Image 1: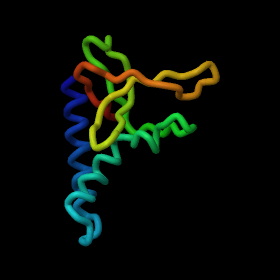
Image 2: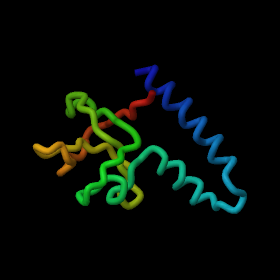
Image 3: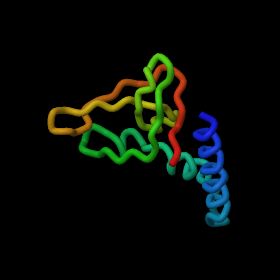
Length: 107
């Protein structure tokens, strides 16, 4: 757990440093949205029911989710962990929201 939190802190620090190097014309809001977009897939967009499944980060639902692995998505400005489901052909066809606290996985 400590390793995951430390890894996330280091990753966020690196991303924050890169975000500060962005164009001087970017607003604070666009910088913030860009940062979140690097970790959370847009739903719909990066992940949807139209054939797009491009997750950016994995997460783990705890304890009621029995440590089930999901993905981070951003929908209407809210970031959450969802547990995807797949059809018999292996295509994304639905999800269950992670109702409990979740942890973002890092490399």
